Image 1 (cartoon, rainbow, N blue to C red):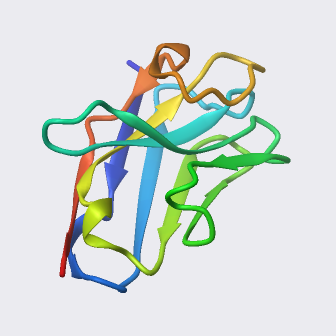
Image 2 (cartoon, rainbow, N blue to C red):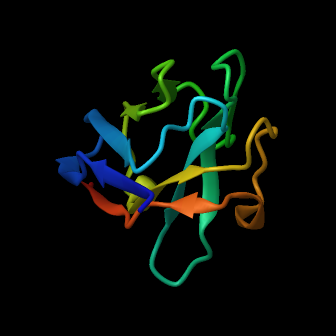
Length: 125
């Protein structure tokens, strides 16, 4: 059974930092793009950041550029999201995702085939 499991969420104050991790089991994703999405209450799930299967290219939503950093291990087992200068508007459930083999990074959730269960991030003002 393929699973993506997120960890590291929590309650922090504005301007704090937080690191999310995603662990893959059941398979490795060394040849798959991986990414992070988030969903705030009453809103659609939105793209946050993605990284190509090679790790050679990343993409970020404008709202998090310069504050968030995505990284992955070569084996395709662990994905991380370092978040700094957090804002209350970053409050959401954060989901780890894996796309299709050798595909590019897409903001469209339909392009991603594997999803974690999500981890809550709450930023207080």
